[in-house]
Image 1 (cartoon, rainbow, N blue to C red):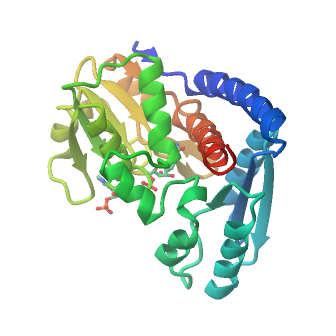
Image 2: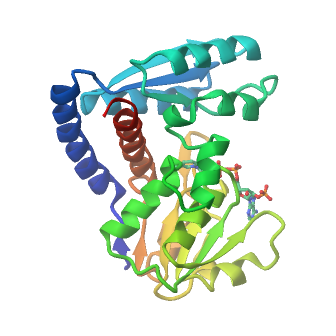
Length: 282
Ligand code: NAP
């Protein structure tokens, strides 16, 4: 069986380090890092994610405020809340929990968040900076995957990384980060042909599709590194994109689900919040 890329263990280590850093900076600047999370509506999955994020902040000594608004909030009201957070010197990071209702222009509200407080790295300024290899706030899930690859000293230079999924949240920023790591990158999506054949070329395969257990042994080359990002809920059970049992013996390294990319995403949210804080306060 392949080695486990233990996201829970690395996230725990990162949280402990961030806690020490946070204490140090609070003593130095007398200001507590503060993440404001805006939650629109009452989607149970979103509520759970927001609770995890709030708890993670509090555990490392950061302040977190959750602004919960009903799903019929107007775009203008949401923009006003974001403006208030942008102008509050005691708020360092702003996160808009997705998805938001369809009547709100997602691009408009995401880009209303000050790029300096954009802990998710979704605003245009951060997307552009990432694509130009400039210092940017990088989306937490791809950043977490990079941290995992670094921790386990996975070779990336010259390796072929195949990414399943081309979203703004995972697939595209992941591709940028792997290019920065000197991998050769292929991005696949719903119109790609011969997906298993493409995936089987990967030295590093990253699945971010959201189709339960889509990736089986026919997608994986012997010795590949396999990273599972997908989360699907079917009848209350959570599945990754990767069928772990079918793939584990072919992979050299593999993320478990749960305990892989999920905890790393939260750890990187804390990393980004501290980064915003230091840029603003330090
Ligand atoms: P998304 O915006 O829905 O994007 C999914 C991507 O998968 C799209 O690019 C889509 O292609 C592609 N796709 C859909 N069906 C496909 C198929 N049959 N074959 C190949 N590609 C296909 O989702 P996302 O936000 O990127 O998230 C992806 C998954 O990761 C979701 O399950 C999400 O819940 C999960 N996630 C997990 C974490 C974590 O911390 N572990 C964080 C974020 C997201 P098109 O572009 O052609 O539509």
